[in-house]
Image 1 (cartoon, rainbow, N blue to C red):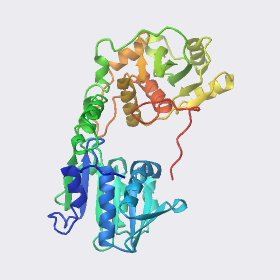
Image 2 (image 1 turned 90 degrees about the vertical axis):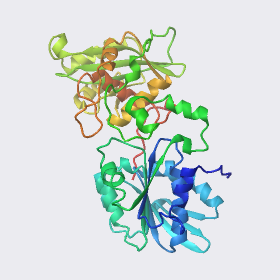
Image 3 (image 1 turned 60 degrees about the horizontal axis):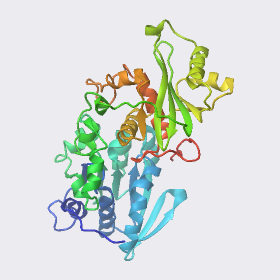
Image 4 (image 1 turned 120 degrees about the vertical axis):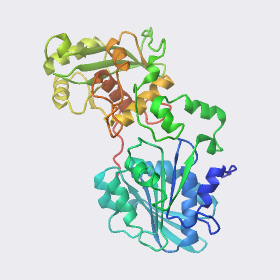
Length: 422
């Protein structure tokens, strides 16, 4: 593997713990900033180098939101670099452990996922000489604090890496703002700190985000979400007429409501782009009283007409409506993925890249795009629970159908749930 020249910020992350560094006495390092800024793998190389400089026959932890994401984002890209640098790595998949040897020293690296409050129990009992927490802002505080408490070996250090979230986030308040009190060395990364990114690629990333997502992912700032959730949808000529000709397949996404509005969107795929062609939107307060599950099902049938959809994606909390669809036996039902913030990011990316387009007959979707706002009073990122029913069904569609990457490609071979991480 060929290494490009490191940036100044990367060199700082690589060498902060070295004997002659003014920061060698720090107990922790925190690297935050923009996406694709070159901090993750650089921190990984530095972490392993420090472990073997300082210790032999000790245990360490590598932590991510899930073990699957940890392997994808850190371990897999790091392994060939370590081997090129002379490390020998033996993996024990059943134990989620790597045994690593270099110049006669051997250390063990355990992999942990910190996706929810219950994850803290998984790391209890182990004694560690150091820990690297990748995307620490996505982990619950209970897991992180339990993980740090495991580092009881003399000389142990903490390594934190993350992209920014909102400014009331516990990690920002407890670690970044109190970094001097915590004796932590803080490094802020920008995209320009990654020598492997061309200016053309940086411009491409800049075009993917807007609003608070731009400030966080591109500028690397811990800012509050405010204003419209999708401000770029206010641009002129944002909404298209439905394309002519045949479509490759159809899907319907449903946000179900009886007292609250129900919103169903009909999606057609044509030449790799998903078009929201038309919709069924029923507001009982506006349109004349609540409807039953069966009446909403007839609205679904009317929306589809003679089309045969691949599936109908339904609000996961709408168990009774899912059962009505299954009982009729006409359409396959898929419960939607329902992580709100991740879903909003996926919708934003898919819309900006043109992988998803909204057509002009979808009047209620167009109306909600102009009204869907972040909650200014919240202590975490969440939209105001108003004018959000078409927004929810669009989010269900993108989160369930589109891959979790910036190319928003269709999942080949059917829509399936993600692998459950241990």
